[in-house]
Image (tube, rainbow, N blue to C red):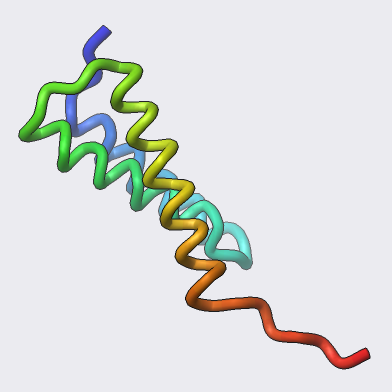
Length: 77
C-alpha cells in the first residue's frame, strides 16, 4: 500500500484543526509531524512502515521538545 504524500499533509492539517477544539497543544505536534512526513515523502520513497515509523519518531521528538522548552508552571503548595 502506498499513501500519497499529500494525504500526510491533509491529515496533518486535519489534526491541527482538531487542536482548535481543545485547550492544550498536544495534538498540534502530531499534525506537524504528519506534515513533515508528507514533505519527506514528496522527495523520498518510503514504505508504509517507514512512514509510520518516521511519524511516530517525529511526534515523540516534537512532544518531548514541547515539554522540555515549555515546562508546566509549578503550583504553590
